[in-house]
Image 1 (tube, helix red, strand yellow):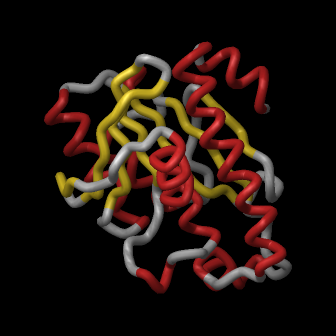
Image 2: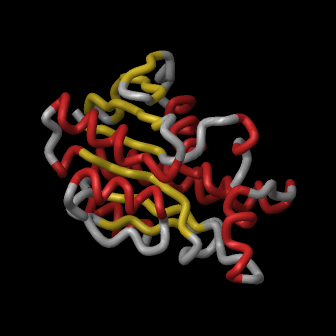
Length: 185
């Protein structure tokens, strides 16, 4: 089984923000593959289904971004998931809007949600899809940038990244992560 985590913040005030690209991607995948996100488990909203003949669990941690790793660790421990079964999707300021980057492993950079995941799992050895949100005009305004509302025009561009990330999940599960990296990076 693959455990696909989309990082974000749970309250409606964060819906439509740059920091919720992981949640948006999980929603996109669920819609495309008719997977109902209808269960609550380990402080997360969960849906189970199949993608490309692979059993998957789509997971949106409800712990707030900075504690995402707590929910991820609970799933990994309960299901005894290996690192190869984990994919984490999140927003990234170092990736251009509308673009994605897929990695087999790597550091969290400045992303507090990923720092939490890596700290809780005690490893950087798991797949991740970084969805580009671009950088703010002023670096000292980072918090307002990532959780601030976006214009309709920017939403369209950010959604391109969400669609690419959803398609990348299909590519990873169908053709393997190396092929997906070659296709999308």
